[in-house]
Image 1: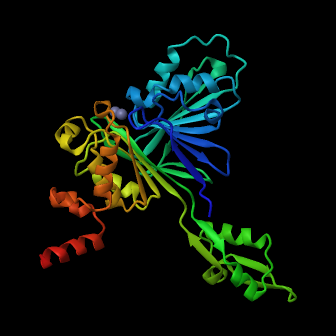
Image 2: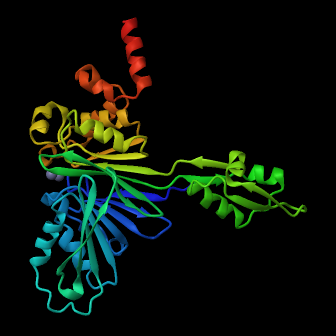
Image 3: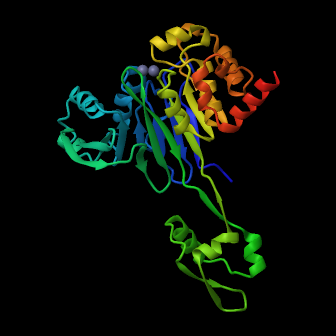
Length: 358
Ligand SMILES: [Zn+2]
Ligand SMILES: [Zn+2]
């Protein structure tokens, strides 16, 4: 199956974080953070429907002006989502310019802040000179941020001495119809398959479906009966994005839960592990800690980035350190006891068994 999400880091690993995720089937795209975004071509900027901002330190947010400049003359709505304070930050950005010639523009910004149990929202229209219009709050369960037909976004609020959001974008699971079963039963493919999938997605197993049978009229069965051997559910793609946070007993479990079984985890690694103390003080991860989080979450692939410029020319050291911990060649749990609880149970049992053998 072709992947629906195509993620690309906009910049090199020593430059500002910005992850561009193209949604293959919709033609839209999502952007996670927007430090410098000069390398993002204008056509790709115009495909953006949502921008997710982890926090508003400059290296994650200064591309706002550039993106606004590009999209302003367009008939678009752009949604920004981020931590508490984002509406004020964007109000401040917009107040820095003069808007006397935009009355005929249709461009609109919607800004959504993730609070503990709700989303606070505001809109800004170019046609009114970006006057702030409060929108009603929306109740939202702890992790959920956006739910669209093609994707959903979950978040975890991490501690970077300020709240910093980590994100996971996932697509709905695929419901694949087994053609061998269709043929064996002489079921004729048609719109009933869409009705069957819709019923299954809605959790309506009792829904009656009329199925045309080759040479034998139709037969009626419930969605649950048909699903039993006709439909195979395959999990959708998941991409997690984690930046600017400290490796501690509160943040680490939150990251592992968010990134669980992701296809790719994009994780910051500001420091190498020799500078672990400094990483702690500055509320950042080391490459090794990123590797451990990826292993604990059982992700398929890890991409580390956002390296401190002090290590310029040492990118390979970051990759090697992260890889060694991700593959279990080095084991942080042998040095920091509390982290063992984050590993999946079978891995812990293996460790205990090998400890007993030793
Ligand atoms: Zn930061
Ligand atoms: Zn940063």
